[in-house]
Length: 112
Image (tube, rainbow, N blue to C red; front, side, top):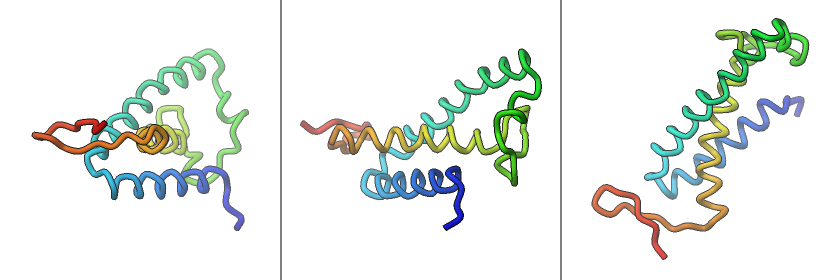
C-alpha cells in the first residue's frame, strides 16, 4: 500500500478509538484529556534534548511532508502521535480490562 508506519498507526488508532467511542461515548472526554496530557508530558523531553543536542531530530528522523514540519522544535507528527496514543490507550484499557461502564447521575460508574 506504500503507507508509512506513521500513517498506518494513525489510521489504526483512529479507527479503534472510534469503534470504542461509538459504544461508550462517556469515554470521549477522559480519553481526549489523556491525549492532551500525554502530549504535554512528553514535550519537555524534546525541548531538553534539543537544548542539549541541537539538530538531533533532523539527524534521527527522516522528516518528510507535514508530519516532519517542526513546530517548537518538535515534528508535527509527534504531536499527532502522542495525542492519538493517549486517546487510544484510554479506549484500549476499556477493552483490555473489559470494564463495563455507564453514566449514573452524570458520573461514569463501573458495573461489576
